[in-house]
Image (cartoon, rainbow, N blue to C red; front, side, top):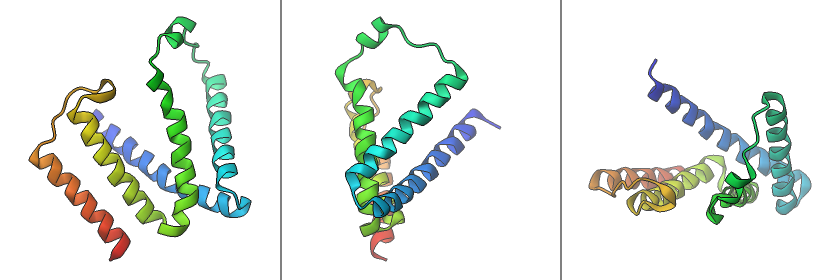
Length: 149
Protein backbone atom coordinates (compact mmCIF):
# COMPACT_ATOMS: atom_id res chain seq x y z
CA UNK A 1 0.00 0.00 0.00
CA UNK A 2 1.44 3.39 -0.95
CA UNK A 3 1.92 6.20 1.54
CA UNK A 4 -0.28 8.44 -0.60
CA UNK A 5 -3.16 6.01 -0.19
CA UNK A 6 -2.56 5.76 3.56
CA UNK A 7 -2.41 9.55 3.89
CA UNK A 8 -5.57 9.87 1.80
CA UNK A 9 -7.43 7.38 4.00
CA UNK A 10 -6.27 9.23 7.13
CA UNK A 11 -7.48 12.54 5.65
CA UNK A 12 -10.86 10.97 4.80
CA UNK A 13 -11.02 9.66 8.37
CA UNK A 14 -10.33 13.18 9.65
CA UNK A 15 -13.20 14.40 7.49
CA UNK A 16 -15.50 11.80 9.04
CA UNK A 17 -14.39 13.02 12.48
CA UNK A 18 -15.29 16.60 11.55
CA UNK A 19 -18.81 15.51 10.52
CA UNK A 20 -19.26 13.55 13.76
CA UNK A 21 -17.80 16.44 15.79
CA UNK A 22 -20.27 18.93 14.30
CA UNK A 23 -23.19 16.60 14.98
CA UNK A 24 -22.04 15.87 18.55
CA UNK A 25 -21.52 19.56 19.26
CA UNK A 26 -24.98 20.31 17.89
CA UNK A 27 -26.56 17.86 20.34
CA UNK A 28 -24.32 19.15 23.15
CA UNK A 29 -25.52 22.70 22.39
CA UNK A 30 -29.14 21.55 22.41
CA UNK A 31 -28.61 19.93 25.81
CA UNK A 32 -26.77 22.95 27.28
CA UNK A 33 -28.86 25.52 25.38
CA UNK A 34 -25.80 27.73 25.01
CA UNK A 35 -23.42 27.63 22.00
CA UNK A 36 -20.60 29.49 23.78
CA UNK A 37 -20.53 27.04 26.70
CA UNK A 38 -20.71 24.21 24.21
CA UNK A 39 -17.65 25.49 22.35
CA UNK A 40 -15.78 26.16 25.58
CA UNK A 41 -16.45 22.72 27.04
CA UNK A 42 -15.64 21.03 23.73
CA UNK A 43 -12.27 22.80 23.63
CA UNK A 44 -11.70 21.75 27.27
CA UNK A 45 -12.26 18.17 26.09
CA UNK A 46 -9.65 18.72 23.39
CA UNK A 47 -7.16 19.98 25.97
CA UNK A 48 -7.87 17.07 28.32
CA UNK A 49 -7.49 14.51 25.51
CA UNK A 50 -4.30 16.11 24.17
CA UNK A 51 -2.83 16.23 27.67
CA UNK A 52 -3.60 12.56 28.21
CA UNK A 53 -1.96 11.63 24.89
CA UNK A 54 1.14 13.68 25.74
CA UNK A 55 1.39 12.03 29.18
CA UNK A 56 1.00 8.53 27.76
CA UNK A 57 3.36 8.98 24.81
CA UNK A 58 5.82 11.20 26.73
CA UNK A 59 6.81 13.43 23.85
CA UNK A 60 9.62 15.81 24.84
CA UNK A 61 8.54 19.44 25.24
CA UNK A 62 9.89 21.96 22.74
CA UNK A 63 12.47 24.42 24.01
CA UNK A 64 11.29 27.80 25.25
CA UNK A 65 13.45 29.39 22.55
CA UNK A 66 11.59 27.43 19.86
CA UNK A 67 8.22 28.47 21.29
CA UNK A 68 9.30 32.10 21.71
CA UNK A 69 10.64 32.16 18.15
CA UNK A 70 7.27 31.45 16.55
CA UNK A 71 5.33 34.01 14.55
CA UNK A 72 2.08 35.36 15.96
CA UNK A 73 -0.07 33.69 13.34
CA UNK A 74 1.20 30.21 14.27
CA UNK A 75 -1.06 30.50 17.31
CA UNK A 76 -4.35 31.14 15.48
CA UNK A 77 -5.06 27.42 14.95
CA UNK A 78 -6.56 27.07 18.43
CA UNK A 79 -8.94 30.05 18.21
CA UNK A 80 -9.89 29.07 14.65
CA UNK A 81 -10.62 25.54 15.86
CA UNK A 82 -12.83 26.98 18.60
CA UNK A 83 -14.72 29.01 15.98
CA UNK A 84 -15.25 25.87 13.91
CA UNK A 85 -16.64 24.10 16.99
CA UNK A 86 -18.92 27.07 17.70
CA UNK A 87 -20.08 27.13 14.08
CA UNK A 88 -20.92 23.42 14.15
CA UNK A 89 -22.72 23.72 17.47
CA UNK A 90 -24.76 26.64 16.17
CA UNK A 91 -25.34 25.94 12.47
CA UNK A 92 -25.85 22.17 12.11
CA UNK A 93 -29.37 22.43 13.52
CA UNK A 94 -30.26 24.99 10.84
CA UNK A 95 -28.44 23.47 7.88
CA UNK A 96 -28.20 19.76 8.68
CA UNK A 97 -24.90 17.91 9.02
CA UNK A 98 -24.37 17.21 5.30
CA UNK A 99 -25.01 20.78 4.11
CA UNK A 100 -22.91 22.20 6.97
CA UNK A 101 -19.97 19.97 6.11
CA UNK A 102 -20.38 20.66 2.38
CA UNK A 103 -20.26 24.40 3.09
CA UNK A 104 -17.26 23.96 5.40
CA UNK A 105 -15.44 22.02 2.67
CA UNK A 106 -16.31 24.68 0.08
CA UNK A 107 -14.97 27.39 2.39
CA UNK A 108 -11.84 25.36 3.08
CA UNK A 109 -11.25 24.79 -0.60
CA UNK A 110 -11.67 28.44 -1.59
CA UNK A 111 -9.39 29.61 1.23
CA UNK A 112 -6.85 26.90 0.33
CA UNK A 113 -6.81 28.04 -3.30
CA UNK A 114 -5.97 31.59 -2.21
CA UNK A 115 -3.37 30.42 0.32
CA UNK A 116 -1.70 28.22 -2.29
CA UNK A 117 -1.89 30.77 -5.10
CA UNK A 118 -0.26 33.55 -3.09
CA UNK A 119 2.05 31.23 -1.09
CA UNK A 120 0.61 32.56 2.17
CA UNK A 121 1.36 31.24 5.65
CA UNK A 122 4.56 29.56 4.57
CA UNK A 123 3.01 27.37 1.88
CA UNK A 124 4.76 26.76 -1.43
CA UNK A 125 3.28 28.63 -4.37
CA UNK A 126 0.72 26.58 -6.28
CA UNK A 127 -1.07 28.89 -8.74
CA UNK A 128 -4.79 28.71 -9.44
CA UNK A 129 -5.20 26.99 -12.79
CA UNK A 130 -8.27 26.37 -14.89
CA UNK A 131 -8.39 22.74 -13.77
CA UNK A 132 -8.09 23.63 -10.08
CA UNK A 133 -10.77 26.30 -10.49
CA UNK A 134 -13.02 23.78 -12.25
CA UNK A 135 -12.56 21.41 -9.30
CA UNK A 136 -13.62 24.20 -6.93
CA UNK A 137 -16.69 24.89 -9.08
CA UNK A 138 -17.65 21.21 -8.87
CA UNK A 139 -17.36 21.32 -5.07
CA UNK A 140 -19.53 24.45 -4.93
CA UNK A 141 -22.08 22.76 -7.22
CA UNK A 142 -21.99 19.83 -4.80
CA UNK A 143 -22.75 22.22 -1.93
CA UNK A 144 -25.73 23.56 -3.86
CA UNK A 145 -26.93 20.00 -4.51
CA UNK A 146 -26.52 19.06 -0.82
CA UNK A 147 -28.50 22.07 0.36
CA UNK A 148 -31.16 22.61 -2.27
CA UNK A 149 -31.80 19.36 -4.16
